[in-house]
Image 1 (cartoon, one colour):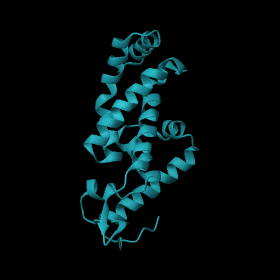
Image 2: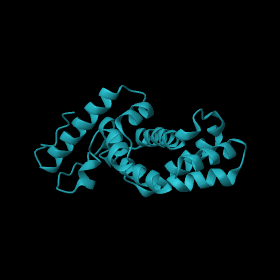
Image 3: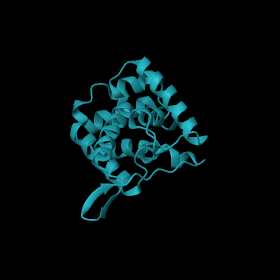
Image 4: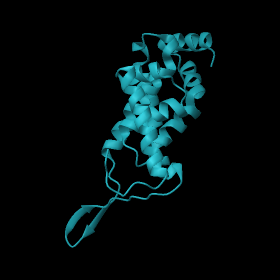
Length: 176
């Protein structure tokens, strides 16, 4: 979306124009969906995440200070919603001999989609924002409220962890 069109739509949305807000959301719908899916790996959670993201964005649109930064702002909201969903999720609970236990569903294979879900959140989020959503290091640092060097480090370490997982050098123990 062109920046001048985005700014005009944000100004209208701030005045309560729901159509302008829908246009903004539609413009980023695909990249938000893809990024949320990379983080959550579950269509139902993604749908919940995107719905909650749009609700929060609509409720807080008047607080947006920089109209030209709508895309960064809505991604930050989506990330926070996704983090909340991830914190609530438990992989699998299994009832065994009157005891509840969490079963760790580890799989090491050559499929990036499969191994990506085992990457810790602190690496996964910057990787999704950089490689799937197209944000640069400075924008990611602003979204995540962390120094640029921390983002660079997490991108590098995340790539290294993915490489280890993809090459099958991981022995099933969580070392990060």
